[in-house]
Length: 98
Image (cartoon, rainbow, N blue to C red; front, top):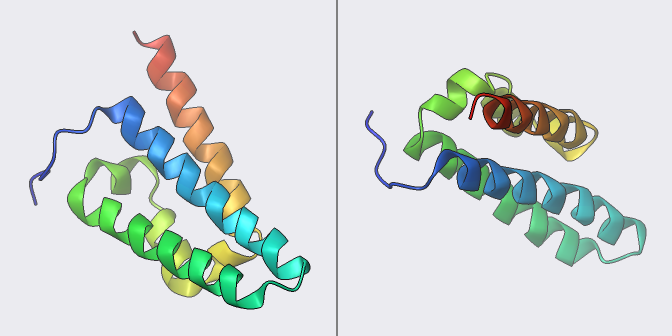
């Protein structure tokens, strides 16, 4: 599948990081009894993450765990923070190769 949009790689990784942080923020919202808002934030983030994977196949190569984490729901617990660390590692590697 070819990429359907021309988003620069660095910008796409930043967008991915924001979506993962949104999952973490949803956990905080739930901790503060904002359950409906937490659910909305998680659903939105997960749908967007799967959308990015579909549009940008290189993400699957860079982060092979991402799709499994989203589909299994593990991302909603601690998976989001592990993936965020991986995104930061990929970003740092990209920055070093410039």
